[in-house]
Image (cartoon, rainbow, N blue to C red; front, side):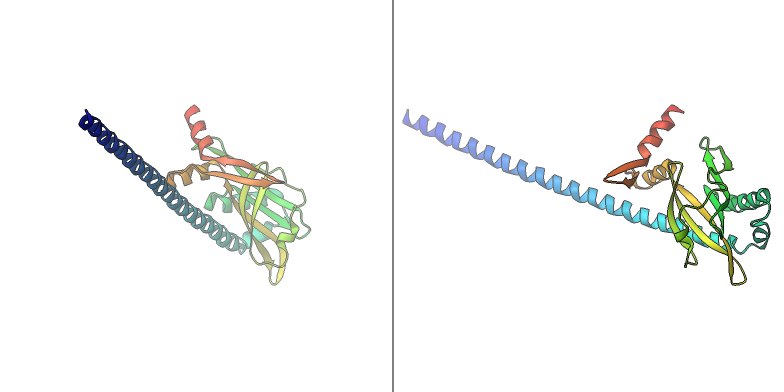
Length: 226
């Protein structure tokens, strides 16, 4: 009888030891997997962050280089400040070369004498129209003083644009500025998601909160309803 009790105690001891060992192994594996997952997510985020910075800077450099090239166009300078329709045609010709979403021309008085916006109707169709600020005063004249090339983020009609300006000069005299911009929108968010495999959202800080204005999730959802 005593032998059986001893055997039972030994059995219970080993069962308890095995349970304790299994719990320790499970705990270690669980936290090890969590650590590996956190490292994987951090790696993905770092890769996505680097990719975004590269693409964003590449777009900015491209816009800057093109704005400087367009600002040297003699034909554009000829119609600048003269006939509005001819100026808009000239601006649109330049806009089409790089498929810009926004182009605008500002005179030295700070008035927007030409503004065109490209609005996407679908994946394959879009229309170009005169912007709401045509004829209005440019809101940020301080951007245009004392710089040869200007890179800014510009918000218009709840759309944020990556915008680059270059001065138009006649000799050493600045006669105005011309700017080209790409929208930071759902299409861009979706393209980053396709590159990185991560959901991409763009947000802007307003007062003490953040407002998401473009999301790859929204873009994917809209695609399903088309």
